[in-house]
Length: 394
Ligand SMILES: Cc1ncc(COP(=O)(O)O)c(C=O)c1O
Image (cartoon, rainbow, N blue to C red; front, side, top):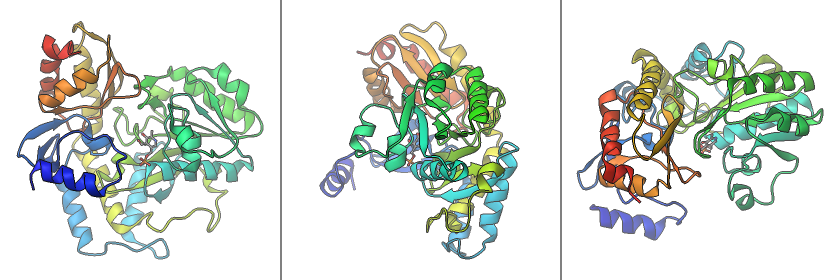
């Protein structure tokens, strides 16, 4: 099928809820995708922050193929070797206190379950989250999302969700009390335009949670699994070494096979009894094979280190480029802040066959490339941004 036929078919039969780029992706390899028209694009949006290991990493593809021929699925009503290996592997790269996992299917589901687990552990109901944070589109997660129109489209919201200002501990102190079950946050607010907080803020949050008996949840759906140049934001120097009580994961975890997870410490997991949490598909064999292979590929290819190098290189290359104010973010979760709205730059890059992302800050272009992206590949973006016609497109 050519692009026009594909577009017409999708538009005729799919609910019109997504704003799409005018390309149809047919296949991918590493940081590149090929379209229905045989054109090759550099994917610096990483399939929407999902393809951390690059498109079709051979180790991941091989593991999925092998598992598909063996057992596609059985639920948690039975034991499974590959599920055990996935949980063990995840624990081996996670911060030391986060050793128990609950597998589910998506980021929003991971956050729903994290908030429920926090309520169970504390026997409290209130949840504090932050302006600018995004946590998903199911009832509890969207009610914790104080960004743009999301809470409105999720009405009626789950009660007892309260907003605080990201990076401002006094604001958190004024709303997080002895009735609060959890504080949930994106440690780097991606959709908001890649907003960061000082490492000291995470230490202050930890202290506040300890003082008031609150469960601290890091939503690492975007920052997790190596993306920031650390296996997790939790426990890294970006968080001043702070380990939350729960880390939620999705996106990169299965390299594109849908999977989510809540990593928990003993305080939380010891309060969860049989049948308190559950989902049919969570922990299915195909997804678990993808998790094991994803983590192995990230480890064996040195992708965590590569993500850190890539950030450093891009920062150096984009210093003093006209139109660029600063580079925000860490590793392969980066925002390029321009001095004017970047929509036209996003479009100009697409016309040069480079896929990037926008954010809810009109001046911030988001990059979420595979962690395997090379410096030579990122230089293709740099070259374009240094051409005045791209950098000043408006
Ligand atoms: C930080 C964060 N949390 C949660 C979600 C929701 O994940 P999902 O779309 O898999 O439900 C997203 C999705 O973009 C996200 O970026």
